[in-house]
Length: 464
Ligand code: HEM
Image 1 (cartoon, rainbow, N blue to C red):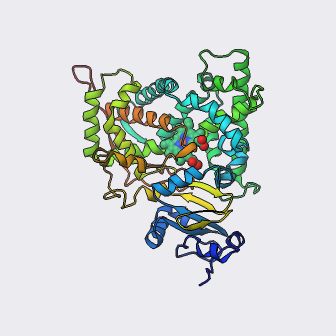
Image 2: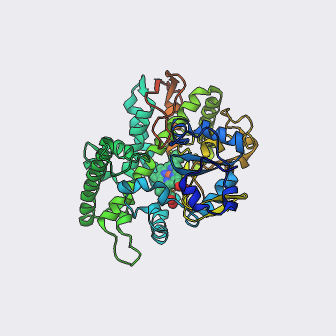
Image 3: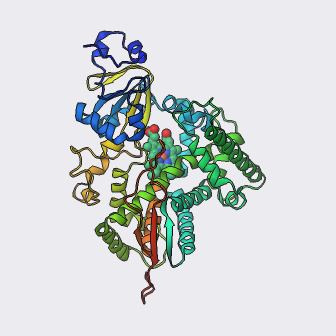
């Protein structure tokens, strides 16, 4: 029977009957014109659950006129990560980010330029550099803890947002930038992120897009000033910005100031909302599961030595916290769907993926596949103790050559924040069950999500 819901795109890409027959099956419930778009925007998880129930790990949606192939499970995710930059590409799938990030920004650039930029970036995310970021995280966290005083209430997403912004600014733009940055930085960051809108075309003069472009320009100008002053007076040892300034383009010429600003800001933007969301979920998960929190407090009393700053070795010994963070990443992947576009017709598991189709890798549902995880809706960090191999099923940080560059950075900040918060305070959620944000980008915790806190007494030994 012919598939009445095929968009013109499908028909063009699949002029041969053979290919039409092997398209992945369409999920039920597509509406005229919009297809599954409204359902996708309101609840990606439910839509994918339906697709899985009807057709298994590979199926098709229609978002407006565009065909979307959904791939579930780690095996198909690995296939898509391997195909990336070959039959699948990132740039066309997230073309809506180009006006703000820049057409030659990192994963939006053409392949050889991307590889060149990655070569420049990788050393800045290795263990030795992470140690310097760790010191910034500890100091910023200590300031946050001090600012809280002895007791009170705070809105978790808002405070995590401020903390992460401070850490990211200092790590990727420098302490001197933080000292002199314009007071609009926090709102510029928020406006910029709201401008990463996959739905409204960039030529529409929508207020949020106009605000986002203005925010971008203000940030570029502020970072441009920083670069000028760094050219006159470099910092030694070089920090992130200074290292970028010392880089060379592919033709061997020194990189431009515009490029340095674009990279530093792009990295800061890539890491901000995602990490804020992950930290917020990590705290709420522990507060909602006191037995798991107790295990973490017990681990702290074994591993921590009073107020001694955390180093990488101590973080590695916090295996219980590590499992809890994996479980948060499993249950609340802040990048619920990872986007690709097929640039030529390809196929997997006997199905065709036509050129022009979007391909969605869906950790939001894959992380809860009953075939991979027992009782998948249950928060159970010890599942990785019993079966450490299950960590490999998680792909909330992507995979393959484009795996998240900031994964360890985000993990470290989560370790520091969770450790210090629970070391110093008894905390309780006052809100009902935390909800995800409504925006289509990173799925953090929706504000307000209030927490009540009471500072713990110090013991005689000086330990907290
Ligand atoms: C919990 C926090 C984070 C999550 C869940 C996350 C998630 C992701 C995901 C899923 C990708 C892969 C995108 C793809 O394959 O299309 C990615 C890539 C990337 N992330 Fe993150 N991220 C986080 C934090 C960060 C941080 C803190 C930074 C930087 C400071 C960062 C920088 C990047 C960059 C530069 C890429 C592009 C890598 C490439 O294409 O080579 N991320 N991230």
